[in-house]
Image (tube, rainbow, N blue to C red; front, top):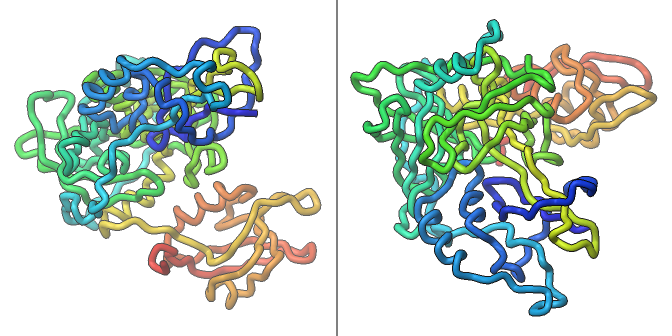
Length: 431
């Protein structure tokens, strides 16, 4: 089956798909292959998709849309053996000489620590919006090349000192950053980068609010979310529709890299997300930030030989980083300016042995678990007292335990349970 599913914003924007007949089932999505044959097909929607939700560039909106508007798609007669799928991505030339050193860096502060709070009582949608709006900013990050312009997204103020949580891809390959308070749209503040985690698409910024009294967002416990629960997304779609709110439900939890492209385990929601929502807030019914909106999967899916106009549309698949999973990395960045990756020192996979689910050790690569007695073939069924049946569940425990801290595992070997404990290491420091 051919598939027109985008890689996911921000890595692979696509085009607005045609309508799908109502009597056609939706094929299961797969990642699309890159194709250069149909580069004339995209419309202005390519621009709308350019950096996931958030890195919509001003030059792209004004320039690329005009160019594409004058082009005609190649029909089947012009390229009878060609691949009709849409061009999945259009990017300006990368700044090949750019390095993270070119970012405007600020200093970390170990005294700043963030934490999530238990969910409070549910409030109305307008009350959710009024509570979070003062805590949101518009993030503008300028590239070194005038051709590449400015990337625009959203950020969440998380402390009265001016710390902001947003997505890394907004500041990727940029050289200056500024933020705009949504409650004071005529006043810009220069921002510094405290640190980032590119793999998990997280970045921490800092600006000096001066005489402005900031309202930090209330952070909720994303572990308490349930599928079907109502959530709200607030951000800056298109980079200029500041403070727009959409609503939906939690569609799924713990989407891992096989499903969402992230090893962190993302929240899936059907709340509408658009370019500019990157780094924005996903809120629960109590008005607490439970996620940072970061990606959207969209595109077309069709069977072999099926016409493009008959393809199924992939839609309503928004993704957000769970705040409870993000906080260990954010707090480490706040304290050190760097991210980390607490690791066990093993190679493993999720399996089911004799009806029991767990994580089976394929190879012990670290000294600490080897010296503690962990062996190849051991089945880890819990870590620090938390049952672990999937890699997402195990990673969540590791990340919240932290490097240098002891991890206690319940292991099944030969039908017998035993406890094995050892300290976690930071795999980023070992590279």
